[in-house]
Every structure is written in C-alpha cells, then in structure tokens.
Length: 536
View 1: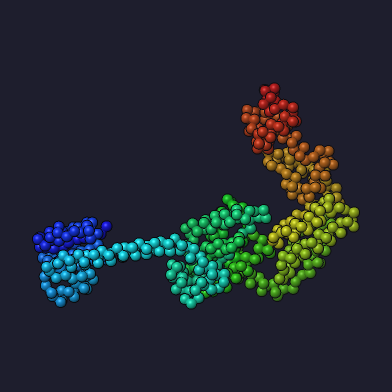
View 2 (view 1 turned 90 degrees about the vertical axis):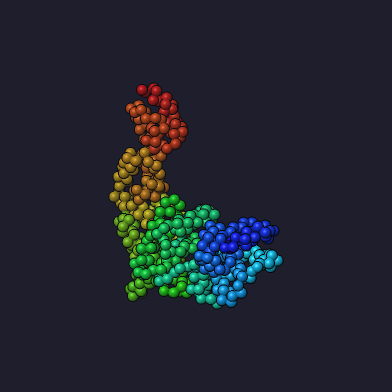
C-alpha cells in the first residue's frame, strides 16, 4: 500500500489536492495532510509516507528544511516540491535534499497524474527489488555456515581457496570470517569400533560437532567436519600464542570427553604449530595430521603436539637403538622361569620397541616373532602354550587386528603375565593358593556380575586354564559354584528378612527377577515365594 502526505499551508490548495484527485486509481490507498512544515514533520514520523507533495515556502518551517529532517528517518520517501516561484536557488536547494521533482503552481492535473504514475511505478520496482535483495541476503545468511566451511576446507585440505584470483583475506571478510592474530589447527580423529554402523557413526559425529559449536567458551574456534571420522578445529585470533591455544585445546578435549560418556568412541587430537597467515593453514593441517597418526604408537585418549613429536624424533635420532630380538629372548627366558610380573613384562616390551621410525607393521612382526618363539620354547618344555594362553593362530589374528601399539602391548602383557604366572605356580605348587583366591573373590563379590574372563584377569591366568584348574580342584565348575552360593544366600534372606522377591534376587546378583525365579525353582524345587511361606 502506497501512502501519500500532502504538506500545504494554503487551505484551498491542500483540500483541492486531497479531494479532487482520484488517488485510489493511481494506486495510493492512504492520503494524509499537514498545514505547515512542522506539522508535516510530525505527520511524517507517524505515517512513514512513500510520497510527499510539499509547498516550498511555508511559515515556521520551510518544505526544504522539513524534507532534510524527514529523509533522516525515512530515506526511501519520494519528495515532490510545488512552488509558485521559478526560483533557481530554491530548485537547487530542492535537488540537494534529493527531490524527486519540482512543480510550478498552479498544478495541472494531467502533469501531476503523470508524475504520480511514474513515482508509484518506481516505488513498486524498488519494493520488489528490496524484497528480492532481502531474500538473497536471507539465503546468504542461511548458507553462510556452509560457505564458510567450504572456503576453509578448500584452504586447509588443498592449500588453495575456491577463487585464487582474489585475496584470501578479501574472501574471508566477504564470508564474515573475522580472524586476526595467530592460528593453530587441531585435528580430532575418532574410532567408533569395528562393529559400528556407518550411519550411526555419522550421527555421532554430528552430535560431537553440534556439542563443540554450541559450547559458549569456544568463541575463537571454528569447527569443520572432516570426511570420514574426524573434526577439524581452527583456533584463531590467538594473542598469547602457546598458552592461549593450549588452554583452548584442553577445553576441547574436556568437551570431547564429556560427550564420550553418552556416545562410545575413542579419540586422539593432533595439534599443529602456531601460524600467522591464513594461506599457511594447509601446512598446519599436514602437521596436525602427522601428530594424530601417533595414535598407532601412543594409543587413543590424548593430545599430541607436532612440536613435541619433532623434539622426540630429534632426541631419539642421537641414541643407539637396542636389539629388539635380544629383548624378546630375555623376555621369553623370564616368562618361562615364572619370574615376570606385569611391571617387569611391560618394561621388557618397551625395551623391545625402542626402535627409531617404527610403524605398526614392524611392531606387529615383532609381537608375532615373540609368540612364535615362546610357543616353541614351551613345546620343548613339554608344556602346551594353547592350554595355558590361547590358540597361536587366534593370537596372531588379534595382533594383526589391533589398531594401535598400546592395544598390542596390553594384549601381549596379559598373555605373558598369564603364562609366567602358570609357570611360577607350577614350579612352586601354588595351585591351591589360586583356588583359595578365586573362592575369596566369589564369596565377597557374588552380588556383582562375575565372568570367567573377569576372574582370570584377577589371578593372571587364561580363562581356559582357570576353568580346567577349578574343575580339577573343586570337582565343580565355577558357574555352578557361584549359582549354589547365590541360591544359598537367597534362602537366608528369604527366611530372615522382609525384602521383596525381586529385591532378594538383586541382592544376590540377579537383576532379572524372572530369571532368578527360574534358577531358584530349578535348585530348590519351589519358587522363592513358596520357600518363604514354608519357612516363615
């Protein structure tokens, strides 16, 4: 709807303009009048007109002075001046306030009609253009996050922007990327597990990205999703350099840790050196990626700085490497003698791995060499390596499938300690002590979920060997012993307390009350409720 304001101090002319023109046909739906410049200024504030027809000379405030003030708060208005004087100076002043036209009185209807048609046509075009511009601005703002991400991804991953003909800083400014000072890049890589669904992984990655972007404390960080299983964090506007960026990286790790409680994954954060220019982000990305690859050697759940890795490499280059096969031979001797505890085993493994420029394939070959020679040594001692530990082929598969060196170390240490413990007990005849230790655990922890693997870890035996040993000594399986123990405790509670049936089951290790009822009836030949009624 186009709105018109008529400002005229002559009553006859003002009324004539308002009532004798067919404004509705001309597309003007609202017409207001004012009797001088001051009144016109007040009416304009309330109406915010599209067109003003105003006399030039009026008492109190001239039309030109009024126009100067109106265009301050209503810049889009079209002002048409009318005057009975063909004064060049007045016309110049009118042009200075961006007058749309200047008419000489008396006004002719045909001339005014043609001018109003032209004015309304221009107003319609401007409003359509304004709407189109607003749509474009809205579309740009809605896609700004995507455009920023695309620009930075090009810059970081490929080392160039989408438009190399323009300055990187000009493009960054166009995309409202207000970044100054120093920069540092952090690459966060995730491991969601072997059996994780690819779509579920993508959802978890989106959750992580949203969590990082939503955290208020990361004002000077931009987060980008890296194809696959990673997130890139661009830390910018770093004034205090290392100290400020270290704090930011630490806070990012804390947020990653917090989110990991809701979503199961492992992570490593590789961090680049500090850089001063945006066009160096590609080099920063290479450094962060190199640091993140240390997960193979160091494992997950840590921050690795590229600078620290360079210093470690420089330090190791000056040291004389040890002979890993000599360390393996020493380790096998200690294990077969039964003298190797967990701490000693881990120390020997670390000695075995002190080798510059090691990669995961090299380390896997060392562990396979270790177990192959240990199996041969035990065969020569008339001992079954498979009976004490695991099948040799399964061990080799587990080593090959391990993703990091720390994973291999934990797995290997567990087997070696188990074998060493067996050999030591055999030498000192400590099987009875092991059985006593197992019985103590069962009697103390029967309320908790207990598995054969859990018990074997506690006494440094393989699950298979522990199962055989317990059956030989007790003439009953571990599971049967645990079930009888739990049912005995349940009988006591049913007779001596007022706990509900499902509460009794929970207190003796059965979370599922239905399963508790089935097991109890199988052993006692009556349900828990029947047993309580009989003995109360």
